[in-house]
Image (cartoon, rainbow, N blue to C red):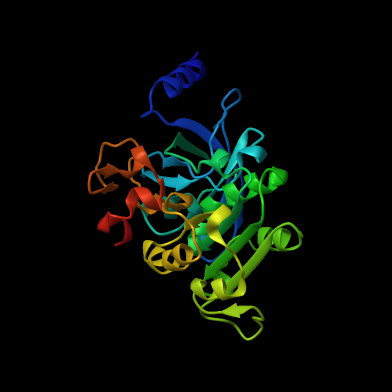
Length: 284
């Protein structure tokens, strides 16, 4: 009876977390850990690429975290890449497999995948931005025949900061996706590109007329990536960005995510450049 009551409340209220179990965890870098989370039997996240959940620990609090696994690979569970930077995220890093956490969501507007059908796709991921983009990348690769040329550009501070190295190797091994990686602070054994992510644009030949671009990273990165995309003919409405770093409560109550008149958690976190190009707060 108690379990049934919890399930009913979780379904009826966006404020009630659903108890979920950590079924696995894997260290990605010194700061980021990948958590596999499983909802109770009969519950499914039904998320779309670019959406986020509110992750909570009883007695500590909650924080918004983008779902980094593809809906095509959910099987009743999903993955979250958590960077230890605050009270909640540090507490999550101390949990063990089998621990219970709370999940609210999914929330937010996703990438409009259907609008990408038949188009070339350019993924641009800076730092932690690869986590939310991973969901979309695997979604596209699992339906590869529905898209044109696929290019992935990834930038990180150092080789040790690169997220999902196994996935990067898996994608790079395929012939139907181009993968280019750069770091700003190379190690002695680093043999790939060195520099900020915009240096990778010199390594690809692309035209924007039949292309969509998806960019996720720190807002300052957008300022430097956008000019190259626009110069290659991409329309403002074909450039999609995530502002998930603005998130807090997820349901438009706290105002933390507000960009001028827009509540990011309600109308985003995914926006086209056309929708936000006049908002100074978006790129601050």
